[in-house]
Image (tube, rainbow, N blue to C red):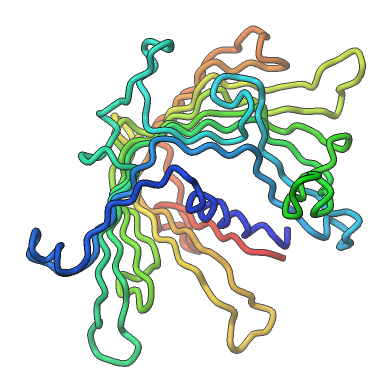
Length: 326
């Protein structure tokens, strides 16, 4: 898909959220309190809601605008995503659903969404070695994703009588793919370098997600046999939990780099590369239902100590993922 890398725009949407509460300190104030120049930013967001999210492929499969389609995330009529496509909240303890409380075991000390420490550095050796270093501590999150489907892309300005910006999709040409899911994460740390990036990658994740990663209520839909008498088929999974092998937490060690176009090979365009390092992982898949969410479960699936390798010699532990347009 030519526009697949538009996924990066999801990050910029958060910047337009009206809920931002920023606490910033200038260099002199930060130096007085910590003994180090730089900039400190606390991002205080407790909830982000996105009505719908579209990723448009402007030329479809056959390369013509008439076949433009889009991946769409929209409300699925359930819980947090009843009317919203994506809801991101502070980590919640839902022991009492009628009165949810913040799960402080999954937040950073400040209770902010993220704390950033930004420094500019001249680098070493001279010659384009300057860089910006951003150290980020991020709280755990509860991410609720509604129904995910594919639709024919609309035309900008026609999806709404009041907005010239909205494009949307064609409701009568839509098929659901996923019924929705929920992700629960723990606090994480990341280091981002812009410029020379002497750490070897733009983003380095080297942290432990407390409590591991949890995905709940994942439904994969098949509309190929759906008709007036039969609903779409569904493979429904109650939960997926991932941790380090024989451990409670999940270690994350990733290098994320953005490669530009080749200066010697015109066919080699730019792309994003994600290299994951680390040891074996345990997976527990609970409550697998085949056919529909209400069908009897076939049971649970447990995978112990799964390890992947990459490289021609298959000696490097981890995986490499590249994302590029075509």
